[in-house]
Length: 200
Image (cartoon, rainbow, N blue to C red; front, side, top):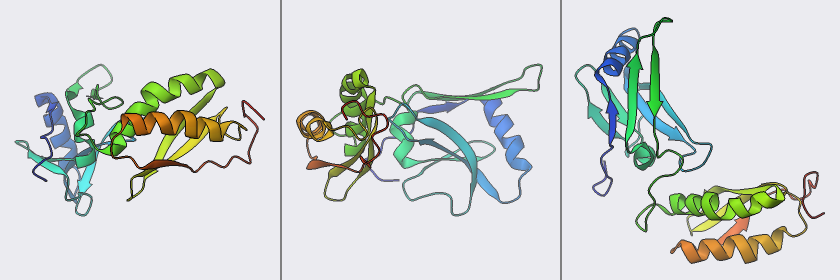
């Protein structure tokens, strides 16, 4: 665990610990559970819990020892797991494991957050609401080593004749203003498909 990483603030209730320990006991090659979020900081974020086997963990994982098992929290997901809860409650059908992570889609982002998180925050809170008027959206595909954001346009923005203007005058301007350290923006969208385009 790196020194600047904040410790994960997520609760696994006693009933959930017992349930997970029981599941783990039925597996042969697992070393614990791994908790992570796919597409963190976006509306598509999903909180996941999976068996952790040798080789599944990474150097940035935070390992926490519980009385009956170990949990591996993916380093990239830790800020998004803040105030999360894993609980298990019995019901007529047997029982249900629930995972709540209120900050999975929208973490507390500040100047010290990774550039990727800052970019997603601006895209989903400032850029996309205005693109939605044209049935469009934009998402971050990747952040290059030299700090360029590779974006993908969808909906009414894909194939739109005005997308270059939107990219330069709207999206890039907003991102460069709000995300210090970002060098620029590139478009990865295939604009030859004009099926849903707002301006053809």
